[in-house]
Image 1: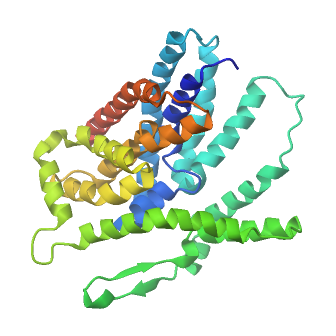
Image 2 (image 1 turned 135 degrees about the horizontal axis):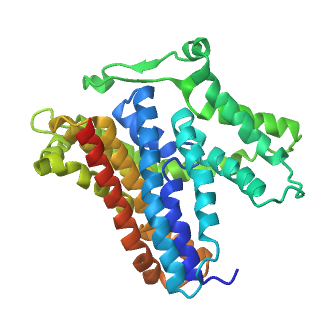
Image 3 (image 1 turned 90 degrees about the vertical axis):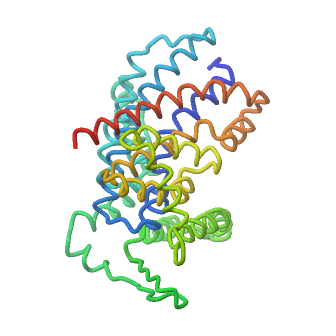
Length: 354
């Protein structure tokens, strides 16, 4: 399309701050916040909706910076109004799906944006093969069913509990049938049978799972150590939270920046949430602030931090065969900071109203 590689990589990473809120299957909020903090489904819904709203508004500011980047590169966009409208085609469904089905908010909103964009651009004569998207539709239905029908939710809601782990007095439980893994397995095997595939590609799948496990397991273990420390002295979480609470009523301004720092260091929204979510929750409780709002700010900041994470910049630049990594960071730093600051201000205002 004639755009510079630096510009293309910068724009992709800036918008990744919105898509990283839920990833492909909601991992950043489900594994990053719900599991380690033992949040209720209702709290997760509230955090997902609020973080999506904050992310959309922050990305609106980032969109203005993107227009400036195009202008500075002597490649101004000709139809900014259409670009904004196409952004709204994604943003509005994204917030709705974030509340209803966070696991697939990004995928479903992107699909709906695609359909609305084609309709808006008046290409009705273009035939689109929808069959590749049918598994995603089936997946969405399976994920939504327990939320729409209470009897089904109760039927699959049985717990597997572990009491007094290793004599530590720590207990935990999980609901295996409510894991997003189950619908994915059902749809995956169903597609394989329908296509009469000679292989289920389990080897490739397990390799990817192992790569994720190697990164996530130590992070979750460290987070749990931080949460459950403090048997004979103040815990690490309590110590960090007491330091953060020194900001008092202005702490919501800092909360999203904590998430940004976590993502910048680790390269992952999920790991940023795992590592810093507990201290954010403890700080909210010390300051008598609504935990859902503070955790939403943490989650939003962690997602926005993906645009300036060196790991992501290197990965995207290598794909584009780009050597000028420093320019990408220079392009993205100010938009990311401004978007994060806006999220903090909105969170501060929301807490003031509450």
